[in-house]
Length: 325
Image (cartoon, rainbow, N blue to C red; front, top):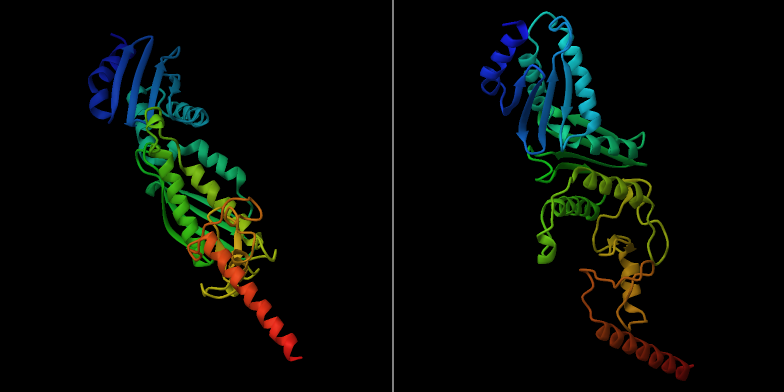
């Protein structure tokens, strides 16, 4: 038996015992094919061929995966080829399989490689995205002027079947927007992995990646909110300096967010809701969606009756003033 035959025998005997999650598909001179699986979405098929003059030349390696990025696999293939060159004159198959398995274990964020690349493209120079492979999370910082938002986003081991988790949020936005950032971010992540209540859609539902969805929402929100105007007075809602933002939720200049996403000062919102037209419900001046807000629970009919009463009262007072002149 030659060197290759001896190595094939060793691979056949030891592979599935020494390489966690491995399945030996083929082990012949023309092709060694091994499937290495950590999770359903972290599976790499390793195809190995023996080069001419092996083991004095490196193995020929091809990596395949139904779920991982092609660009990632190309990069890993190059690294594996360099690793093989360090093993010239020795058996290379088992060491390179161990190397690939270790790579999967030590880089849990490989399952969102393409998403991370896309996110980096939309970040601005003041923003930061740091990968923490050891903890399977990304550290995010988004800046707009003096406003900032920081958070840790955890990527679960069975991602994207399970959604990302938004943790340790830190920001100098008013509390209203903090609740919106966190609440909406979690909801968007949930929608990626849980089927809608509509039974017709449930049967065809497939979980989708949630990292880019959540981070894109956060980036867009942080970048646009400091420039948003009140839909009534058209003044910028948030001051340039976050320290000057109104935090008293009953104050006239406190910023209120409608369910449609547009902003009002509290005083402007109350005034807008109390003045006609009332027919069909009050609508947002910008998007024309019906206005719903937890600080305004008055029905259209009652609001109209109150306005009519105030107008009648004002006319009576005006008549009295004219009479007394």
